[in-house]
Amino acid sequence: MEPPQQKKTDAYAALRVQAFRNFQLSRFLLTFSVQMAETILAWRVYEITKDKLALGLIGLSEALPFIATSLFGGHAADTFNRYRIARATIIAIAICFAAIGWLMSGGAPLLTQYGVLPVYLIIGLTGIARGFMAPAYQSIFPQLLPRQLYANGATWGSNTWQTAAVVGPAFGGVVYGFTSIEFSFALAVALMLVSFAVFLRVPVKETPPKEKQETLYESLTTGLRFVFKNQIMLTALSLDLFAVLFGGAVALLPVFASDILHIGPQGLGVLRAAPFLGSVIMGLYLAYYPPTNHSGRNLLLAVTGFGLATIGFALSENFFLSFIMLFLTGAFDNVSVVIRQTILQIMTPDNMRGRVSSVNQIFISSSNEIGAFESGLTAKLMGTVPSVIFGGSMTLIVVGFTYLFAPKMRRLKKLE
Image 1: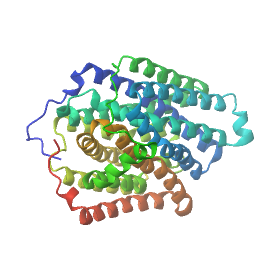
Image 2: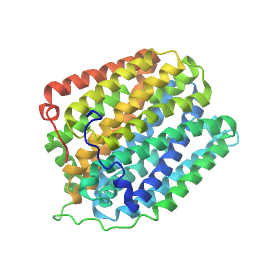
Image 3: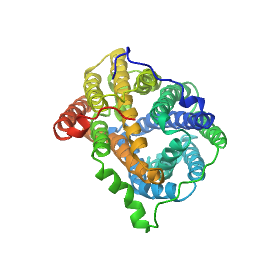
Image 4: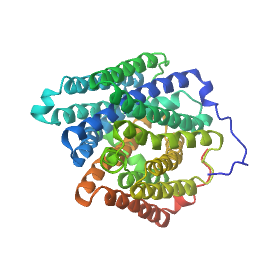
């Protein structure tokens, strides 16, 4: 990251575009409500099962359908109207979480009879919806801004998501801790519907036409071929994939909150919010001082910091120190997010944004949701603390490997 004495950019340029503001407000409400519901869901699943692996299976049950449908979602976003796809998937996710809330209400008799399998099945449906939503959302974003605002828009897009993810988990933990499971899920679903209403205010634009006629197979694989031929893009995605895959500790937070730090569901909400709070504060800094100068160096330093903070969290037995370490993981991760998103927006042609975004989302989902499963599995095999130390150490190894074998990324300078 560049020092504060460098020339500042117009930090609020993207937010001056009304369509972009409405889009981000809708995204904020949806992220807030989903994060709120997922925090409650994770705590309740651990209450029912007392099984660390069950927490990892939540992520896996969403990731596998998401990955399976993402290429089709990218094809759809480049073929059909992206705005209508986004609207339909918001409603689908709201219906799924309403169903989960119903399953968990009234003493959860179905869960008592069948275990948490019905929840995993419904979470799988949200994964399918996300497989179509993510490419559509990522393709809409650059249609709302001129090219010179892509980096600023990526920063505020990250800030929007991270701010919602700060407040959502903390709010969900507090609401569940002081009310009921029924009220908590009803409130989350209501906010998802408000997100849908706000999205209706985003002006609809036509999807850019494809350059040539393609078969379904050619269309589905175009994004993959494009990414794998672009060394800088592939390296940025791969670095994030393996770093978060091994270095994520968020999936095990219910275990740390319950068995190590003894802080209850309210404390869990605060811990889940910590990395997102770090990301928001870093994002505000990046709005003034973008990390797009010396991008390769900044990316490698940020992922290194992420790995070290992950190890620090694993070794901590103090709530405040744990909060600080998680805060730092979020701050470093946001630098990576802004650089990666700027690379994607600048290097991707308009008529391929859906398909390239779908490849990006597969990488992200593999790192986040499958990373959650990896965390649950290694915790079951190695123990909670050793598994997180292992993950942070593997992140540092990935950075070293990237430095040695990806010279184009290491030498990457300014993105514009």
